[in-house]
Length: 78
Image 1 (spheres, rainbow, N blue to C red):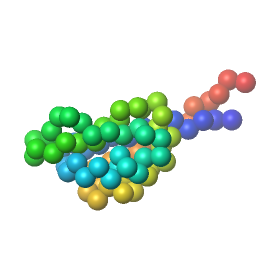
Image 2: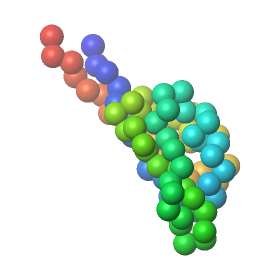
Image 3: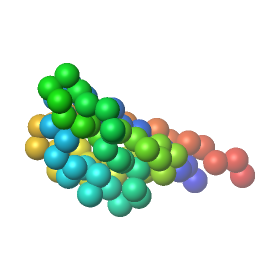
Image 4: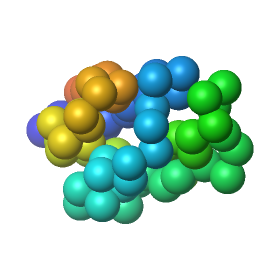
């Protein structure tokens, strides 16, 4: 059976640091950066990328559509 591995990219130029994606992540993958983007906002990033399942909860709640979700099937050895 294949396992799903997820990953996201955040458009840090447009992220306003609302923190909704961090709160909505069921596996605590996301956190807010201590660095700021050119507009002065702290942006979200993958703090724990190995835990991402690609559920897309973060992308669904992002009001500015800054998050793109990727899913990859990983074949398990029998």
